[in-house]
Image (tube, rainbow, N blue to C red; front, side, top):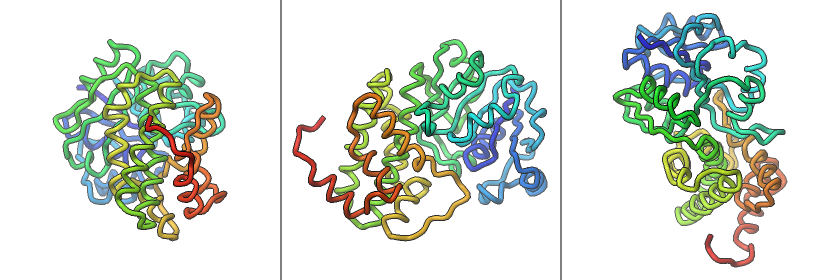
Length: 323
C-alpha cells in the first residue's frame, strides 16, 4: 500500500491528509504540537483548524518525526517563511523519498521560492510542488478539487501524479516549477488587495480591475524569472487568483477585508500574503519591474500608506496602454 507522509497539521495539511486517507492510502500526519496530535487521534477531528471535517480512522496523527520514515512521498505543508528553519532543524533529507512542497510564498530576505529554499538546504532532494485553487475545508470532505503538480523531472512527476491523485483530488502535471510557484505565491498579495476593496465598499468594478491588473503583474514578474507564460493562465496562476480574490474562505482575502473595514483580524492560520507582498516588491526591484498594485499593498500593510492614499495613488497614475 502506498504510504504518504504529510508534515504540517494546519488546515491545508490536514485537508490533504484526509483526502489521501479517504482514497485508501496509508497516511501519516505529522504535527509539532503533541497535544493537538493526541486530540486528533482521540477525537478524529482537527478541532483547531478543521473542526467540521471528520478524519478517517486509518489516518495516523503523530508528533514523532520518525514515523515518516518509509513513506513513498512526504508532503511539506510548512508555512513558507518557516520552511528553511524547519529543514535545518529536522533531518528531512533522511526520509529518502521525494518531498512535495505545498506552501505558497516568497521567502523574505532572500526572495526565494520554496523549491529554491529546499535546494539551498537539501540540494540533492528529489522534489515537486503542489499548488493551485483549493480550500482545505473542501478538500478534507471530498469536494472535487483540481490542483497543479509541478516537477522538473518528468518521470518523478508522473509517478507522484499517480500516487497523489484521488477520485476527488485531481492533479494536473506541469514541468514549470518556477511559474507554478509564482502563481500560487503572488495571488495572495492580490487577494489582500481585493479583500480591501470589498471591505472598503469600493465596488465590484474596482475588484475586477485589481484582479485583472494583478494578473498582469504576476505574469510580468513570472516571465522575467524564467517561467512559461502559459503556466500563469492555468490552475496555479489564474485559477488560484480567481478563487482567492473572490471568496471570504481565503485567509488573505479575509485579512484584506478586515483592513478595508478598519477592523482587526485575528487568526491562528498563516496569512502568507503579508510577508510575500514585501518580498515580491524586493524581487521585482531586482528585475527592474514596476508592480504598482503589489507595491501599494505592501505600503498599506506596512502602514506607510492609508487605504485612501493607496486608492488615490493607483487612480492618478499616468495613463497608459493595457499590457
